[in-house]
Image (cartoon, rainbow over all chains, first blue to last red; front, side, top):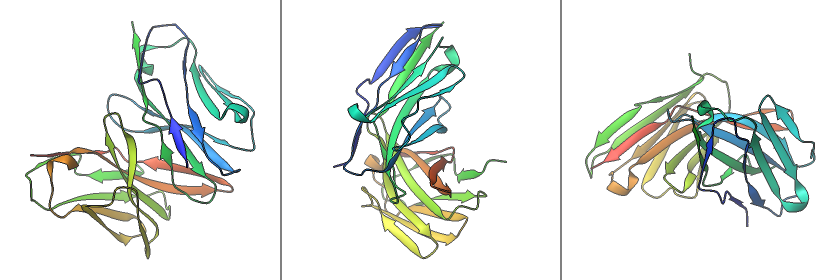
Length: 114
Length: 114
């Protein structure tokens, strides 16, 4: 079975705090892609990052960083020095290579308070 | 201009009415998708199309039908709308760059069935 679990339904932090959003996945496929998308209050889905299963190098983009660990089937997302504009629902997704279909987690709502 | 557009952006309809949601893209992608988003359930795949002649059911296709009129156009129809089809609907396109695969989403259509 293929599944993506985002156990944190909602997180609230105060501005400038660091926050980590968890994503755990299940798949029997050996090659797959992992994604994070952001859904701000306006409702659109914004692509943030794609990671291949054969590349476990962590990635940093400004205040955003992603920690991919195959050993624990996790692809966690950290926002450093959070800002109010980071308030959104964040989705993690899995796509086994060649299927071209995504399995989405249920999302984590992040509220950053001023 | 947006690469993936959806019309209408908001729609209120009554039980039993037929309704069509339209999606157009200028990204030149072959793959197109329709999802629905419900609170707490994430995004679920309704239908997907890998090219104009290839249309497939997703995990929740009952009550829906689709038409791929051209590479750039993919429409979703609710033949007889019911209240539990009230949701946020997203169209997405899928493109590949080498080994990579990313889906890009339209702005969404909010549908309310009374």
